Amino acid sequence: MGGQFVVLGLSALFFISFSQATSITSTSIKPLIFIETNHSATAARSCSYTLTIKTSCSSPKYTRDRVSIAFGDAYGFEVYAPRIDNPSSRIFETCSSDTFRIRGPCIYEICYLYLKRVGSDGWKPESVKVYGSDRPAITFKYNKLLPNGVWYGFNHCRKIM
Image 1 (tube, rainbow, N blue to C red):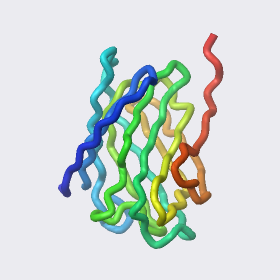
Image 2: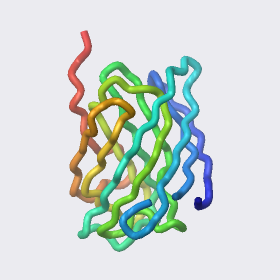
Image 3: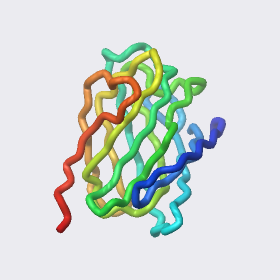
Image 4: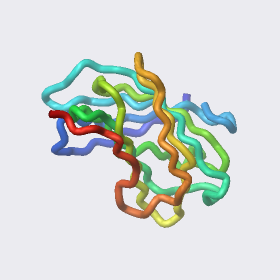
């Protein structure tokens, strides 16, 4: 297993998880990233998610940018990791895949996913695939350079009456 780092933050969303990431697999023998979440005051049951993030072959060779991720369902349950990058472990290199294991609040059906990049290197994810514990996998196709400093992604949620 690789090194660890802890990042904490605050948010006003319904269920937010704050993350600790540890590196361990990917296409160039890179480690899987483990992210353990801490729930908000109204914590829900904890579930495990596996994310595979593919970096485009037209992305910069590597990035030192800070990368955050948030995904959730139409009911307001959300998993949020304010920092999933780790430049020293060669995450998000051109033409690579990085796999993350995240524990967070249980989500009914993942219908949105956003990435945020902060820095000057740039980064072009090709896709993000999320596997839930007992839900079918869902893939969000990006294949675009992420803008700097803003959340960018997809929301396929239907309104809940």
